Image (cartoon, rainbow, N blue to C red):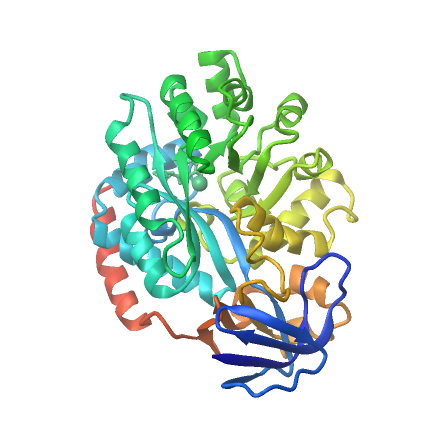
Length: 429
Ligand SMILES: CSC[C@H]1O[C@@H](n2cnc3c(O)ncnc32)[C@H](O)[C@@H]1O
Ligand SMILES: [Zn+2]
């Protein structure tokens, strides 16, 4: 199957290549040509005049079924929000709820230009089934809490997920091991997870230093910062690690992360809304640490629109440093594409538009008053575009949305399922 995307403004996100007008040829799941003018016999032509083509956005941290909990509990401190509201609601979720909740998240992600995401949750099989069916790309992690026991059953579930789903769905699904956070994982079981990850070459996905309270709690319990705690357990020695948040990191902490494999998923909107603080992104970058962008779950971030995260990420750093020159448009766009891809360990496949890479592409309708005139397309993408401007979403060469119509999700059925299930889950909490 050959598809030609014609006459688009191409933003490849490849370093050194400036945006240009041209065509993109897809063959099967891959990009086989990007050129100002391609003439080839193809099965399908997508007319792209007035459209901007860029790599699909990559959400480097989220909890997809939490879309069922959107708006249920806002304006609370993180620990109250989590312990009094989220955990009791999650305890009521059936596997079918998880399936429909993650599908809701995927509908929103596809409609706002996200093509791949890293997900951590309690039951992952239903999420994997939904990913397989919907056609997105995902890194799936069974979140693990080790406070009362060694988590034997849950670790087995995590390994089952990895054995069953790694590389499945035409290679769109990858997996990680997911100790939830330093404050929910005792040292001994955490050490065992780290050695398992190293032995089997499995990446690790973990929350880190999200709140001031977390740092205080870890200091009281272990006389260490959360980062020092993970460092002395050997987390950063060999494993590839996706660190979610990294808001409260001091200079010593950042020094400990230097040279790590993986990096930090910055979740600016969730951090803003929960009043967590501003992550030291420019310091992390200065130390050579990879920084991608995520949303966190819709239970905290409210929406999964990565274009809003891009704006928040750059504006927060400009504000924090009192300097509008920091984190310019191109750099923050790379964070939401190729840098996030590095965190998910899929950067050899996606994250830029290049010949040989998988065809994960979004088309943005540039004919909108808030996008015109288009003096600088990268500025428009970073500062003006929002998720609703995405017209077409392609993953692995397959159309998942065309002219804002979802092609692999029945929205009517989805909305029915979601409203009934969400109501039942939160009743009385
Ligand atoms: C054990 S599966 C994942 C677990 O994480 C919880 N969660 C969602 N958002 C956050 C956050 O911002 N910080 C810490 N934990 C979070 C979610 O409710 C799941 O139980
Ligand atoms: Zn999270």
